[in-house]
Length: 200
Ligand SMILES: [Zn+2]
Image 1 (tube, protein in one colour):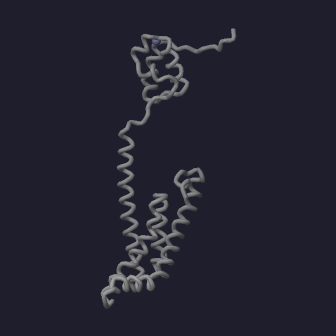
Image 2: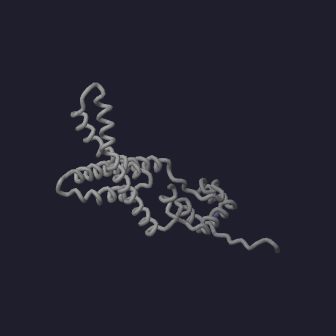
Image 3: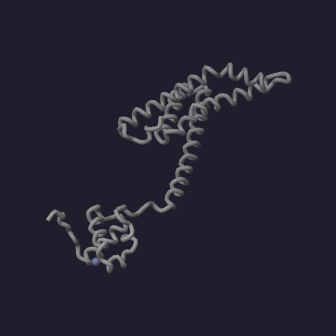
């Protein structure tokens, strides 16, 4: 009498439950009962051959299409995010160099980086680079126009770096502050188990 009591189900219950098990909609207990029945009942096994062969493992691996669709969606979102970051840092530079609203750049760079950091744990890191490039390019082009001699590109570059490095440092700090704020907010909202914060 050491054998444990086994619950068995009749064929009609098995045939009712089997489609749910196939869809992954049945509970683990129901799935186990169905599989147990299929092991002993050739009639039901013939009706649900794929379940009979599946053993104890749960069915329904995601169709291979899913990965491709998700990847395409992901790339699309990344493209939009990059466009947002480029547009945001460009706007920040335009505001920074405009005589009227120059103070608002202090908010724009952290805000753009913060939103990007919230949306993507990696891509936001391009924001400080974008901010600096957007500040560098117009200055470089202006200095290139003013420079003389054969080493014009080099001279303009050195001049632009000498002009710009302090500003770039400020922009990088502003961006990092925005990212830090987003991370802190993320921790507060989602908790530490968030996988987005797992990669630093
Ligand atoms: Zn049966």
